Amino acid sequence: MRLGLVQMALGSIVVLTTSTLNRLMVVELALPALLPGFLVALHYGIQITRPNWGFISDKGGNRTRWILRGMAILAAGGLMAAGGVVVMETNRMGGIGLSVLAYALIGLGAGAAGTSVLALLATATAPHRRAAAATITWLMMIFGIAMTAGVVGSFLDPYSPARLMTVVALVCVAALSITLVATWRIERGVEAAPEPDSVPFREGLAQVWAEPAARVFTIFVFLSMTAFFMQELILEPYAGLVFAFTPGESTQLSGMQNGGVFLGMLLVGIAATGLRIGSLRAWVVGGCIGSAAALAMLAGIGGSASKSLLMGATVALGFFNGVFAVAAIGSMMALAGQGREKREGTRMGLWGAAQAIAAGFGGLMGAGLADLMRQVTSDAPAFGTVFLIEAALFLSAALMAARIMPGRAPDPRTLVPGE
Image (cartoon, rainbow, N blue to C red; front, side):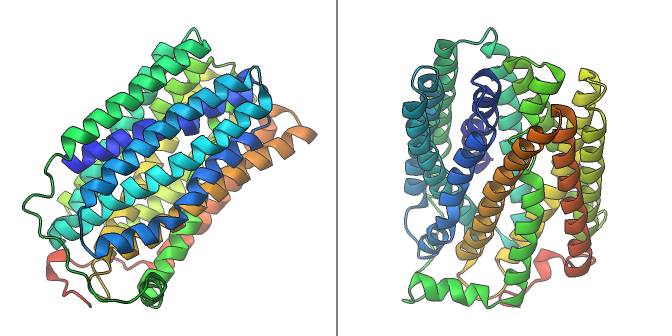
């Protein structure tokens, strides 16, 4: 629960940079969607260093130190990102330059803090409790994202640069304070993992990549997360341009989507982890297919410009995204402890890097395709085409999951380390 508070604080800062600031650049400043797409891709691309953070965590030491340092860097980056949007109103190139630096700091901070949290979860939690621990922390993170988007959205209207800076500053200070309190002496009583061996990072990463299960799962993570993140940078601009949502309304729409994610995660967490209903493969496949259907719905309602239909389709997309995500996370936590010993952090880092690269690539591809389609057609069909492409990727991920994932994962309590 305490590490879940850290995830919640982390998500509360990141959601502002990937939703609210993105919408302000595209709608209020009339900039191409490719610009925030590039900035968010930059913040994800820097997280390719996650395996290195995980490898360092595997060697033991004070992980709390890296969590706190990462959150401080993340908060500084979030505040600078808001400042970059404000500067863009009067100095376009100066604001873009500040934003590039800000998003680089966001990626560095999220990578350091997020990977350290996952490594601590994977090594300090009993094997048969890892999936449940992952579910709890992710539910708390999604709750924090949804709550932040909803609350911030209500305070942003009527929009002004001063109001934006005030709200973002308050969120960053609150996130840092929560992290400091939640991690106070959290590693007291947790035995530090001994240094596994003296191999360099590249050799340790190669050892994990040589494991068939870790390698195939990495490919699946990349494909599914590309589909998952393609709509991240275009949903709020879609709401603003096609449905005439205000900045506050579109931020609240993002909160509704993440509320749906929370409900989907809660359902699977209770059914799959608690009641053992259905296999992880079934939940992953169902989540992917449901996400594809919700995206098709989003594409189809553009001509009606009905705000209620948009909100319903958005909540449905969030719900099925949550079903897919928590099942994939459960698989990830179960697989983290399998294979070569003392490589949990490295595996989590590898999958985290695959997710980060896919998130950056997916977001950039979605924004780029939206810009391209808007050159040849009106806004509604342009965004709708991108949503349909994303739906096709989700269906491809569902087919891959059905082929590579086991029908029912064994009870983690029966697994032998190294099997």
